[in-house]
Image 1 (tube, rainbow, N blue to C red):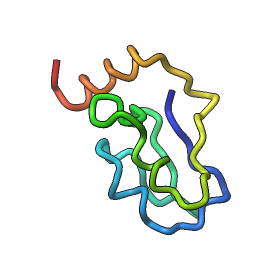
Image 2 (cartoon, rainbow, N blue to C red):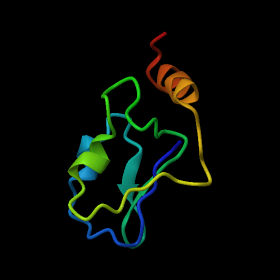
Image 3 (cartoon, rainbow, N blue to C red):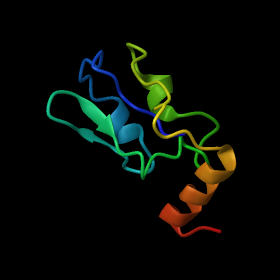
Length: 83
């Protein structure tokens, strides 16, 4: 499952540097998450860092990109080159 940032984002800038996959970037109005790079921090941390740090709780699961933990681990391995 990739995460997404909703329009409730206040552009506080805490999520972008916390993302180990560089999946978060500034969009036209607020931050956005690239679902091709988001592993929900699987392989890096026990829980998504952006969700932990977000002061307004605007980072839910993206219903258009639901993935199993196994799929997220495969994505992590593909992105990092670690097997």
